[in-house]
Figure 1 (cartoon, one colour):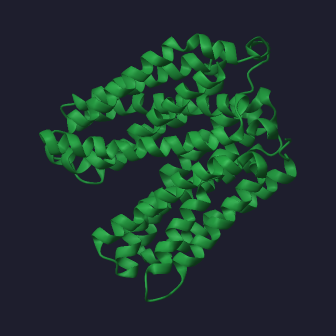
Figure 2 (tube, one colour; figure 1 turned 135 degrees about the horizontal axis):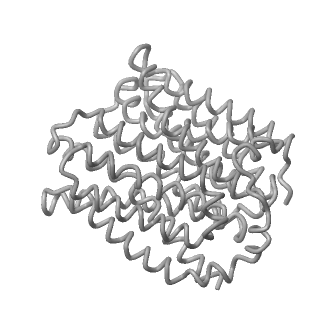
Length: 388
């Protein structure tokens, strides 16, 4: 039962990553069709992020009421409908309307699955699941590229991913009995009062973990979004070469999470977070070295990605052991919201800074958020140690 359900959850994590990179890969063609300016993609992304933050904050109430399996199935169905809605949208305002269920579905399934795996599976699976998210996020640009190459229509790329989500939705609904079998304490959870946002924030150590998660996601997303621009404008690397080497960052995260799965139980979540932060720090130092050759910066991007790899899954998996299984769904939901706030607002802020000052601040900006991560994680370790 555990293994079969785990396989379905792995598929769900691939599905969770699939929509994340669709907009970016399709927007150059979409905007020409709609006559929209290039920055408008940022508005659509922010609407998606807003829906994701809202559903993450509501995840405790939804999961308590309907169960993790049902919330996941319905959320994936919402995402499938939203992706199809994108493919038939006649203009940008309609895209913006479909962006809301797009985000609502993503946030609910993210919080529900992360909490379920943290409670019922070992830490290695959390690392491998987030590695599978990276697989999904890497596949979707190829799906969109194939659709554009074969037909010249971005709509077919969205419909293809929507169809994949429909198939997964059917599998999730068929698997609902498995979720009820594996989950062992539904009755106890229903008897407890809802913790809510205020209750979770009153738990010692939760505010520090939220700030650590915000800082991590801000640094990770900034690194990925601005890597190519930094290599081109600050290091004189050619645009095509920079795009290829910027992918080293994502390769580092995905491959790093695969490797972390083998070491997760031996090292433990707390140690993995510290090791990851140290790797991120070394990466920042290499990127910042004022050398004529760009090679240290390229190596630094790979090392920064490898350092990022264990941090996200380890913070999530440690939640029940820091704050108790009875509080984990509420806390993980708020962590997801904090993560999306960081990934939504921190990278554009650097864009403003790069435009008004210099893009050479790239490693120092990431370093500042890394220091906040280290500081807040150390504070959380003192206030709410991980109880293995």
